Length: 199
Image 1: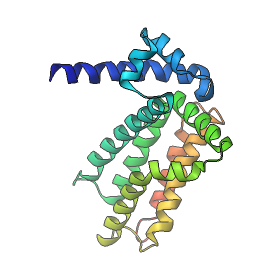
Image 2 (image 1 turned 45 degrees about the vertical axis):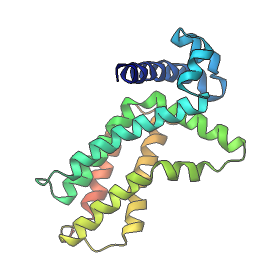
Image 3 (image 1 turned 90 degrees about the vertical axis):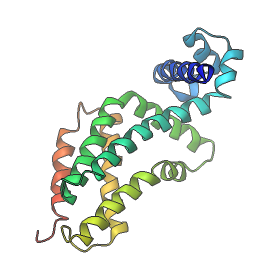
Image 4 (image 1 turned 135 degrees about the vertical axis):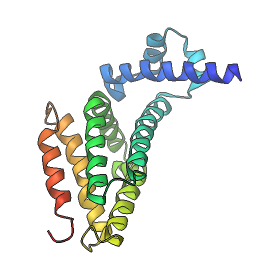
């Protein structure tokens, strides 16, 4: 049992240092050797934890998404919040996490451009990684419509509409280099408020 815990802790430390390599060099220029060097271990030892740099990178993204999902689940399960408050709080949490992880977002964009060059469709990859977030948004919309807090609407279109604010947040942070998402926070509150019944 102690060996498994030690293995997991070492794996987390490798991920942290690998992320720094990705942020410094970008996905394409980061190498397994650079990651091993940053971790102070040999490539052979690094292979005990990860099979290649793509696996390291993918695992880093999964960790971020797990953090987002856990925060969203807490908000959704909060019975004291109405639907509008739940949806708004979910976006505020997502935006906050995106702001905190801006360097990782730059690496993600670099990675998506890299795989697009290799002929892989990045849209399909992004959709697979964000399916849970879309599901959470749909669930909150359906719950709000059933409780008559929200207008009757096409849930799929509304989910896509709301999700586009996440894409906008990433674009603003990474491409436009905005310092924060305060303007977008106000925009999403305005957009969500218009889903409310009798608006």
